[in-house]
Length: 253
Image (cartoon, rainbow, N blue to C red):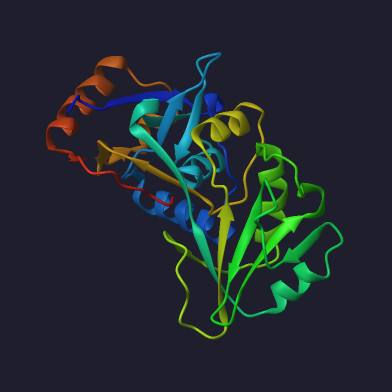
């Protein structure tokens, strides 16, 4: 396995593709303030212009560092061929959010999507399976903007959920499994980040092999561009002791 590439990058050059969960962002900020250490570095892909980087994993870490006044962030630089983009399903309790969706004028709940060539959200309960579609999506080919519109419409109707990596039937009578179809692709993420659009939080699932774990970067390196020798020496020492995941792993920070 090739040695991972880790670079210090100006935060202004990092392009997120999803929004933050406020409670999780607060937790990450508190952790950074307490430890002054970035334990796991975010993962990003080079963009196609202006030495920018598309953030794949680390939305909350990067946002927290921005809010705390840092200027640079260490990134593990990924390659397209090593990245897989998936989509989390959400386990949501209660039924009020479903009733709110049913009252919507821009969406429809249907029992069959065989004639729909586009975007839909599968809602599975212990009793039945239904599908939410945008009314303008019937017989219309899917694209990134339509995914965003419908997925956002659904995810904003509930405030708490648990991520699940497979759309399985929940055993809890009061819970529903929400699955987003079709999931996002790497090209979707590139388009969204490049145009400064943000996805709803908690939907994109990034798998990446060869991730650096527990690099433990002191945040003193991130206020201003450090002396190149100091950064190189630190990185060389830490890389000798850091853990590397040969398996595809994901992170949710």
